[in-house]
Image (cartoon, rainbow, N blue to C red; front, side):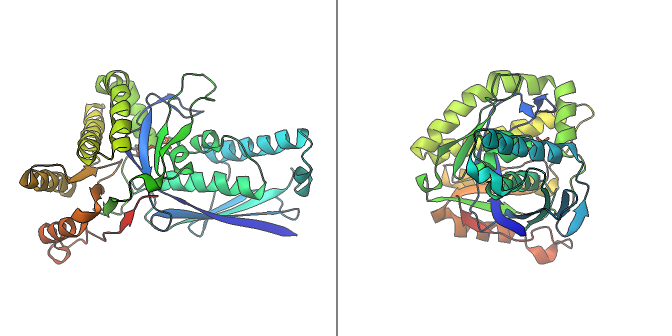
Length: 344
Ligand code: DP6
């Protein structure tokens, strides 16, 4: 009398960043954003949800440890999924009778990468939770709006390939949805490298960080109103044309502007460290050497570098990184690994 479903969801890495909310509860952003969803078998969350009449309450375990189920964002996702179950039931779908609405769920979720080190763990986690619940309870609908209410960036992990999150205009958030721009198969030569500079928990989480930025940074307002709309169009064009040089340049400029808004926040937020800045310098020297953009970096709310490049350049660039960051000379093992993969 227990049924359960297991699903996985991959991490997505933004090339036009989301930073700042216009509605904290519904998680509605002040600008649209665009990301690449990684391949399923790399950085991912795996979630099992079980459902039984015998369960007395909803419960959740993250990476083997039980967590508080009464977190508002978790509750929003559960409530919205159950709302869809009720809706389907009122449409007299016979499948809805299989599971009683009163059934409680037990959720078990794991990441195969460090949580909260700025590696988009909440994105994969909430996308996975919402998708797994939807499969267990057989509901359909615009699931990205539900994942969004877990963590903004999670809505983009509901799709593979190149994904945009439309900021939307409505106060109820119904038009703040993710949409696939191109599938993973569109750009098979594109590669992603993750340079793990530090697996430690970040000092300022994205939720609190972006709230302070919205309150104090005039650069963030300028970015959202005057920069991102045009950049979204240019980025989509670059992806459609598989124009790496434009894609890479826009990606680096957007990461730099995001970190500039963090410095413009008061008090300032520092996500990059000396190693991150050396990686930035190395990428620019590498590209200057070839007189074209062959490699691009981007950093989220942490010091770890995500590198976008094309298949022919991967092995040489990895050699260059290993040359300049030999792990044995760096006491702390700051370069933990270089997973290489296609995007999906
Ligand atoms: C820098 O989605 O983690 O990674 O909506 O408050 O949960 P909340 O924030 P979150 O922010 C991600 C910020 C970012 C940029 C991005 O992924 O677009």
